Length: 95
Image (cartoon, rainbow, N blue to C red):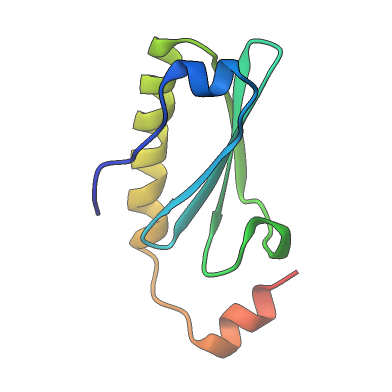
């Protein structure tokens, strides 16, 4: 799809979470204890209504953000390559 946008390091150092999407990929990045914890799920539902498919941690530093971005690009390719679901299938997956 497009470039995965992530905020600069200071955003996370100030204990701010980031939630975004790219196509059907949804992701949340939470800072804590010098790490960034990324969680991914397939849309269309929000974080609270979805099942988290995968979680990964990265160092809270500039290089860690770039590794996180690369991981998200990989996951974006995987999630967006899946066959499109019907609305009924999406409703059935909702928490």
